[in-house]
Image (tube, rainbow, N blue to C red; front, side, top):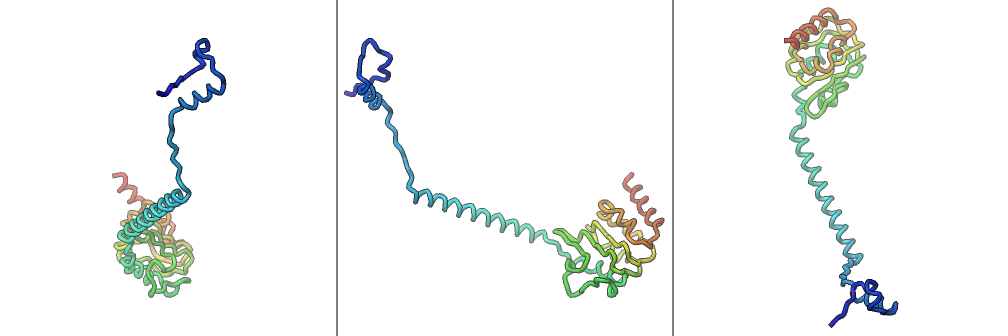
Length: 201
């Protein structure tokens, strides 16, 4: 039979024990505890397995992202025909940085591509001459946001078909209006008014 007095100090008049016996009672009455320790080797193994798991998850995530990017990648070769129309109409072989037609279109000077297509053509100060192509360019260049053709020697007016490139109007209409120093701004202004009328209705 084990005698355990939980709090001896509560009965000062009934129990008079020495300090040593008091500590012995407190030690014996203390609840038993099981202390679990891990060896350093077990800890290292756990950390290693955690790192391996995180690395595997990272690789899986990158692979899935790559699949998504590849499946949505731009088929920019479909833009080759309209770009060649611009090249031929504006004196491409005589440009300051003439396009190497053996390269992919996204490697041509001034042609900027992103995931879903060509978004900008910047041919500022490239010694462009002649006129802008019409439907042969505009009908197949959907998604173009910026067309920068300033400081060149282009002549004529902006073909009305450029009003069909809705992405170009919505994002960078000023590049259409001021696309070349010798363009007829009256005609360009007419195009912009047509856009405003379409938006109003």
